[in-house]
Structures are given as C-alpha cells and as structure tokens.
Amino acid sequence: MLWDAAMAKRNAEKAAAKKVWHEKRQLELIEKENKYNAAKNDLLARNGEPCKTIIIHESNIDQFNINNELIVFDKVRKLWLCGHEISIDDINSFVIDDESVIQKGQITAVTSTNTGSMAGRSITGALLGGEAGAIIGGATAKKETVFKQENDKIIHDFALIVNIRDINNPMLLIKIGRDKNKAMEINALMQVIMTMK
Image 1 (spheres, rainbow, N blue to C red):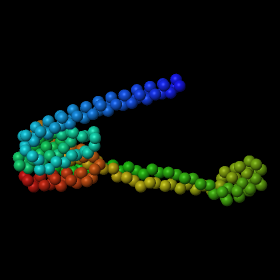
Image 2: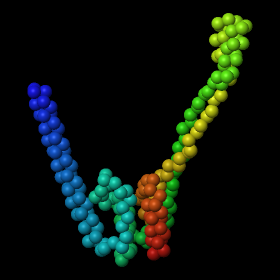
Image 3: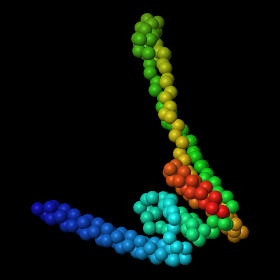
Image 4: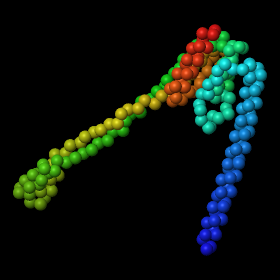
C-alpha cells in the first residue's frame, strides 16, 4: 500500500514536470514564431510580395527561422539568401558544391575448418604421436577464411556558394545538406535568377 502511494506520487510528479516542460516549449515556439513573423513582415514591407520561397532545411529545429529561407523578390530584383539581402545584379556567379564522402562498407571475416580433413589428421596424429599427436593433427586441419564486404555508400553534403559584388563579404556559403532534390531545386532557381541580370 505504501509502495503504491509512493509510485502514484512519483508518476504524478513526472506528469506535472512533463506538462511544465511542454508548456515552456510551447511558449518558446510562440515567441520564435512571433519574432519570425515580425522579421518576415519587415522584409515584405521593404520588398513586396515574393515570387518564390524555398525553405533550405525542413526540420522542427529550423522552423520559424527566416535565416533558413531563400526568397526571391522579382519586382525589386532582390534576393533574401539565408539572412543576406542582396540585389540580383550584385550576383557574379554561383555553384552547387557537393562535398561527398564515401563510407566504406563493413568487412567481415568468416573462418571455417574442414572437419573431414580434421578427423583424418587427428587419426594420423594419434597413430604417430598418441594423444598429443591427435590434438596437433586436428589443429593443423585446413582452414578457409572468407571475407565479405558490404557495399560502399556515398554520403552527399551539398552547399550553395554565391559570389557577389561586395568587397567586405564577396562569398556566401549556404549549407544545404544531404537533400539532393533540394539542391537541384535551388540550382534551377539560381539559374533562372542569373538570366534575370
């Protein structure tokens, strides 16, 4: 009875702590969303409605982060690139870089002993050297080791590198990550932007 009461109290404390944590997390998310909306509204007030927006990383961590967006304002010929507002005319060039890494497949070795050969060698060893001969004869049986390797994996790490006309900050490096489709989408958009110059 005392044990049940202690467990009930502990479970109630855990539930209360979890509720407090969720409420705190919800308040932080609301505050983050409010800051995001204020920054986005300020950006829209300066440049008008965007014609295209790409969210670079789509995860809960990067949710409500204006520095995680590529936004094109075609009417004013500007680009918001992850925290940098630049004129399209100031873009000299761009490249999508893939710093891929090859992860080698795991190698496993399996050794097997030919048991037929082991029995014959044990008998021969026993005839020649008694018990010790049988052990030595069996231990010298044919062994075969087979190595197996899993397939290698290529792990991509895409990045957008933009060269701009700015002496203080001539290059912008935007990490895209492993998402090949996102890298292709950004590449296509940047090619269109380059034709707008």
